[in-house]
Image 1 (cartoon, rainbow, N blue to C red):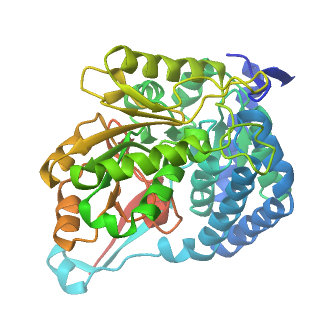
Image 2: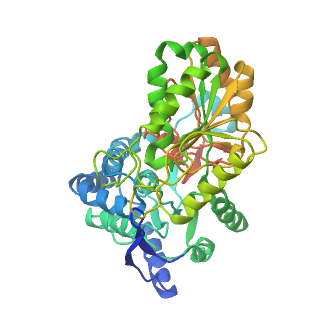
Length: 465
């Protein structure tokens, strides 16, 4: 895949880039190793000051980087500005809290007395150079939610970003440098996917984190396993959005959130709700309101403020989505709306918001992730059937449940196979809350204290009497 900015709203190639050669990659790995030796010794106050400076720059340049993201992958300008603001907020959150999150832990002396210790404690120490392999759908946020905690922990980063967002990737590398981070602390590797294995196998690289497809995760995990290196993987998702009868009292809000949860980022989000599992008592009402709201969304130029849904990021991505929808329709699913390319728009990789009913196990979309504005509707008779259907997926990233019944809430928390359960609201990532999944959605956690400790050496320190 060429390294290029191709505007998905027009199909126009805006700018192309030559990938780094082997010498360029070597120089950056060497610079990262050198930077780690000194960066790991800096105090938290120094790290926080620099990360705050990066956040200040990002706030100042929010409109500029938002336009870049919109040009490169098609998200609306409104969403792009919000993403930049969220990144700055996360930087400040970690700058203010990292020292406390990584403070030494002291067990009760009585608990370690029989080990012969005069005293003992746990210290979190950085691992070293961490390779980040990141996707295009949230080209700023996915990187910052790794970089902010990793840098505050004393690690350094090498970023291999998706090849269709090279300008955002270069901006990130320059951002931390301009904020005052020492040379080599965070660098962008403008390379194709074929270069990842060589970087990961380099003995100077200590670990890797990847957000992306299941195939990419398998490839990175396989190499890292062979090298016995730590990895964190955040892969795909096909999150359920369960609506139970008690949601009838506020069904309009449930529908409004359902629409946002499905089409956020033009439907290209791992944690977007994709499978809408609705109790039969409220199914007809929900389906009618949900379909009407999806049909009313404005599809078009992502730079126009009134646009709700922009283009898909790549031509191949739209083709893949069309294949899933066509397969479902050929096997008996019903399109309540959409299921086609808009006719009135200029060239670009647009697809109408779509609602499919009558989806069965025989259809690919029942098992595969639909990465675009396509929702599948299911009718269930009771809570047990809702849980079983919600879990009937290879993925387990997050989940949304609409119910005010406390017994039902306890059951969903106990039984849903997912990294998160969000009641009466939309799944979202936040610096204070751990983020990650189970099953084929990956392993490990990002954000919160759990995320900052993923790339730390949890060290037992013991002193004899």
